[in-house]
Amino acid sequence: MDKPSPILSVGDLNRAIAESLTDRFDTVLVSGEISNFKAYDSGHWYFSLKDEEGQIRCVMFRGKNAQLGFMPQSGDQVEVSASVTMYVPRGDVQLTIHSLRKAGLGGLYEAFLKLKDKLAKAGLFDEDRKRPIPSHPKSLAIITSAQAAALKDVLTTLARRAPHIPIFIYPTLVQGPDAPAGIIRALEQANADQLAEVILLVRGGGSIEDLWGFNDEALALAIADSRIPVISGVGHETDFTIADFVADLRAPTPTSAAELATPKREQLLQELNAYQEQLRQKLEQRIEREAQTLDQMSLRLGHALPNPERMREQIGQWQQRLMQSVHVYFNALKRNQAHWLTQLETLNPQRTLERGYAVILDKEKKAARNPNDIKANEDYLVRLAEGELKTQFLTSSSE
View 1 (cartoon, one colour):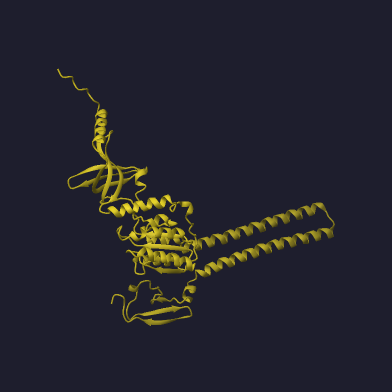
View 2: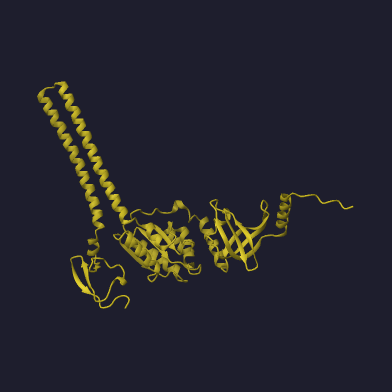
């Protein structure tokens, strides 16, 4: 008579299945489309891989995905290296992901990871070697293609936030085999000129092939050697390049790079008002303290009955000291006011006009900001630094 099989609990059965899966499968390579991607606060990623014939649950733990360099999204076609496991409490077969790359990238992605690991070990990504970004830079340099949409976005953002900051553009190729050398030359020239306090290295989005020029080792070393802080704004928010890791600050987009490099004009004016209010309050407090001290001294004089001549002499000395103290504080206030007036003068639109710019105003005194604002055969006022003139445009942008 056959010996009856032991009765297993569900947990025991699932553990046995998990062990058999581990014994049966070594590391497997699987390709598919990501669906239901979720990144938890713990840092772990959960998603499914699917194709037209089926799907399987996947997990990629924080220790593995931290080295990835980009954030996957649902719909991405990927290739993964994984172990076949079972989540015992739920009885679900799953893939525990060891590495992940976008499908078809193969050699490029492997080269990216290899260089990233090499430069990380060399210390190029260490936070303690990165230069601080000035909160109020006096000038900016932009390195990008002269024809790039990213340049227009950056200039528009800078004009809105900080029109008083001078900008120096260093045009270069940002795509193709000659791009790294061109970017390096632009970086070296910007450092040699010493005209800017911050460098914006920017480019719009694209495929990994389009952005490959920013994964160059020589370029990474040039960014690290720059004496001027570098903000990188390359691609979209989910794009990561070697230049992003080695730059002093990484921005998710070119527009964000411009925002991170500059304070808002309104913020500067608010700071000026706050400083002026602090000076006023401190001066009032000092005068009040000195007045109280004088009252106390006068009271003591009334009780002490000193020699009248000596009393007049002391009062004169105290008055002189008080006047000197007030004089010193008023002079300090004037110096600070002069400093902030100079800063405000820098923001004066008239200064912009004096540098050779002009403003086109319509009949309602509204400034034209876009070629589409100009209409043919209508009167416009062109305001210059030293006067203004009336004019008409024969054609409009739409014509």
